[in-house]
Image 1 (cartoon, rainbow, N blue to C red):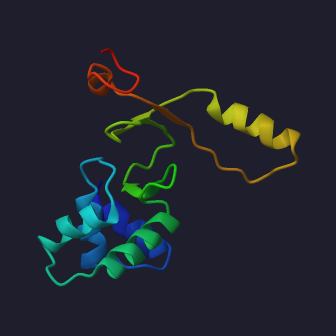
Image 2 (image 1 turned 120 degrees about the vertical axis):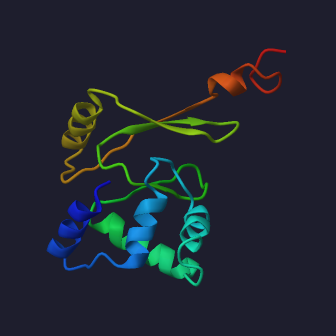
Length: 145
């Protein structure tokens, strides 16, 4: 993610690119899905005094202006990512690995369902839960014995 472009986007939405915001974006720069606590650990390597509260406030701001997305499923802790494109997720029910996937046609299906029920201004996300290839090979629950 280009921080000059991010800075311009933040300024348009009345925010500055502070050192905390830049550090959070760098922590998310590898495209992973990270918990706030993991982001805190990464940011503290640069800014040792930053608090978890600052991380949450920063994530809320970055999410509100569209620079960060949040993923939460089934009561598990929220995970954050800096991916800006609309995408969906594969979630391993065993190891909790999370993978971004594209799924053409989901938007049209969501719009049809919403329109049939009179909903507007919708958002949608598809999460497919199953066992990843690695966990599927392990003996045990729903796996080969």
